[in-house]
Amino acid sequence: MRAVTWHGKRDVRVENVADPVIEQPTDAIVRMTTTGLCGSDLHLYEVLGPYLTEGDILGHEPMGVVEAVGSDVGDLAVGDRVVVPFQIACGDCFMCDRQLYTQCETTQVRAQGCGAALFGYTKLYGSVPGAQAELLRVPHADFGPIKVPEGPADDRFVYLSDVLPTAWQAVAYAEVPDGGTVAVLGLGPIGDMACRIAAHQGAGRVIGIDRVHERLTRASARGTEVIDMDGADVGDAVRDMTDGRGVDAVIDAVGMEAHGSSIAKLAHQVVSLLPDAVAEPMMDRIGVDRLGALLTAIDIVRRGGTISLSGVYGGQADPLPMMTMFDKQIRLHMGQANVRRWVDDILPLLTDEDPLGVDDFATHRMALHEAPAAYESFQHKKDGMVKVLFRP
Ligand SMILES: NC(=O)c1ccc[n+]([C@@H]2O[C@H](COP(=O)([O-])OP(=O)(O)OC[C@H]3O[C@@H](n4cnc5c(N)ncnc54)[C@H](O)[C@@H]3O)[C@@H](O)[C@H]2O)c1
Ligand SMILES: [Zn+2]
Ligand SMILES: [Zn+2]
Figure 1 (spheres, rainbow, N blue to C red):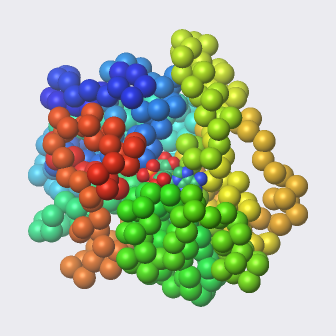
Figure 2: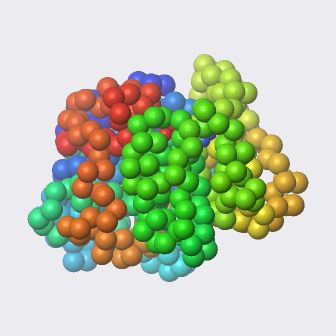
Figure 3: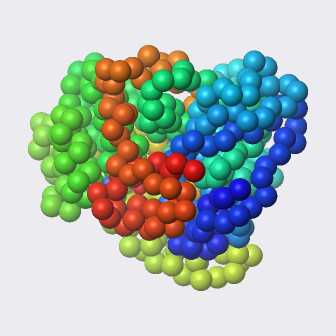
């Protein structure tokens, strides 16, 4: 089959690789009809190289048709139309019972001290072959795949794999008071969708912050008040809009490669030139994070407010303004989205009325062989690219 494989910093290729096969009774093989490109893939493309192996298949936003099943996949059947969550969970352990599927104790990658295995996401998360491919082996298919109805185009449902539950959890963890104000840092797919969900759930004001013109315009067209971070001091602008107080809640939908953190950027450039055996422990120690967005979040949240962090972070050594965080009495809630936890809440919104605007959320639909160009454009935010869906 054809698949998108990683070969080094900013080097992804489309290659012929072996077809996946059923390995466990709970496996299924799904033929991808649509598969997304995520901001998290950009971390693999740029700073997380030391945790990848040449030839790794990328991608974790799968949707398709079940082509084969093992002997123990419950009521999943060949021909079912499914979306597959980006994390692999058993559905039946201590953590899964608590709906903390990203912490599944059956698939946790204990050797790396990490949570549940993820599709296409480095050795930290199990080196599981990813979904930017014609076929995907889905472990624990007795629990993971979400069956969706025939009829509407894939665009209606594909975001259940990642964007929708991630944005939903970001809003849930933000605990915006009724009629309250939430600021969303980053208006990529996750931040844009978080703005839509927060407004839908009754936030009084939603303020979106980014520096990419068409992303600001897109959010503003749906009623979000926007701030261009390049044209303003974000802290002052937010305080001006909130009686000097700051916002009730902040969602960080940027993560570890935020603009505006030059020292960490330099460290990454140095580390990326070293061999993996040296680079990996250095990455663990120096941290891979550029904390610009998180520092902004700490600055603009009001006293006693909440920061919900859905942007992905790694590393551990970047200093945080602990005194300010303590003094402002900030609540912080973060992590990968527990996908199946939110699916039943989201599905009723995926109707013809399309309140969240999923049907025209994608800006680009591309063939799999165009992946190298798609990664390059998405990283540089060229051509108005916000969300890419591949049709393998
Ligand atoms: N928690 C999860 O389960 C989960 C799931 C999917 C994605 N993510 C993470 O969410 C983040 C966003 O994903 P995406 O697909 O929307 O990515 P993206 O790269 O398209 O969006 C990030 C946006 O942040 C903007 N930005 C950069 N620095 C900023 C700053 N200092 N302040 C405000 N905005 C800034 C960029 O211009 C860009 O528009 C990534 O870190 C991704 O890894 C997390
Ligand atoms: Zn993702
Ligand atoms: Zn589990």
